[in-house]
Image 1 (cartoon, rainbow, N blue to C red):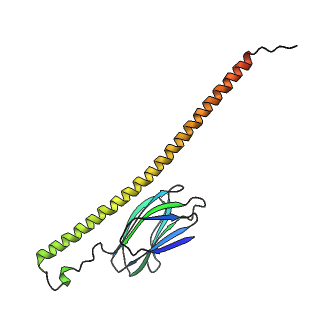
Image 2 (image 1 turned 180 degrees about the vertical axis):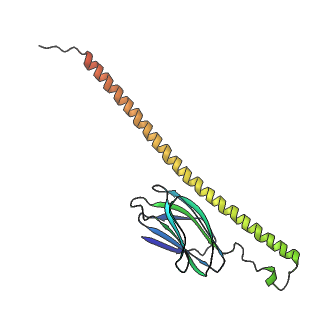
Length: 199
């Protein structure tokens, strides 16, 4: 099964459930030379890995990775059109995968450069504008890093909970085995020392 969506809203983490033998694809419209950010983390399911592929509007593969647990990739659009990001679980026949995905395209701020305006063409204003763009890029980088670290923390928490549950069940099994072995030894020793009378 395959799913598709067009990502037109501002970048945010999307929870994606990829079914066994399934694929989920997302499309991002870009103009030439606009950046595309793809960031994902597998939170749970099987070995916690998926196949990832990023395709250009003309069908060229910009990136392809197999059985990845997380990743963060940035591309610059060489042509205008819909760029496709696909998460595939085709190699798994049993386990669905839960993935947190961020797909963002275009500039973080859609501001007309000072040179294209009818006013504010002084060098000081141009320097301020450049500083604003630099701060914007830095802030969005921090935001994406926070999302990435949150997703990793959630995945590690799921792993820790799963491990703790296994430890608890294994401990209960060991306790039951020890009790059963103790009862068997008591029964065995009693039967060994038991006096049997033959009439």
